[in-house]
Length: 269
Ligand SMILES: [Zn+2]
View 1 (cartoon, rainbow, N blue to C red):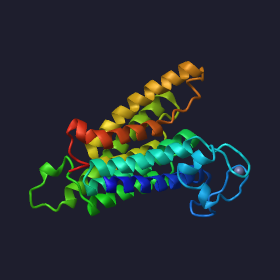
View 2: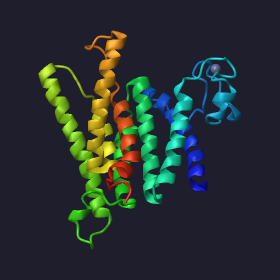
View 3: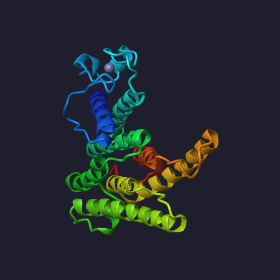
View 4: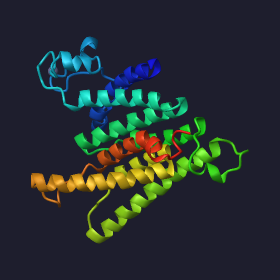
């Protein structure tokens, strides 16, 4: 229980960094410099006002200097990341736990970046795809393709092929769907960011995992999108669904519940 708890605390800190990324990456600002500052009055935030979760509660969700409201997603991102890191190290063996927490952190960034800015930063989509491929070699897991390899095969070979196929097949299919939609309707249905994000998910979750994510995310996104349009009265032609947000939620559900619930090996073995 100690290790999952420490991982959870570390996750809170990572969540705090993800907040910086969610705000700064779409604005092309450095995520390292300058130090955290209030986005309204620009004043630098003291370390004691920058403690994940705790400071938000103590400050009542307001900047100490100017009293401006701190965006609602700051504490949400921090708690979600903390919870994901805790769960990863509680549920999975060490190698899978490291992968699952990194994957969760990137997915959470993308979920909120898409809600807030309708942007899926390349740092997390392309960068995440590359990281997934590197980790498939460095920390191999038994994917669904392992059965096609002999017992003497290097562990990283099926793991890397699974990750590469997961990234390639899923993003390729989504690109094709988007292209067909574009030809038929004459407007973009699926953004390039979504396609790159799906590659990242495939590189981590493998073929079965990313396909489950695509199905689950599309169903969820369609239902939520139609409900939103009906309730808000916004026009179907102009509303832009944050598809990446739904993909991210689906990916987290598959990564954390897919194995235990569906008895699907891959991420965990
Ligand atoms: Zn302020």
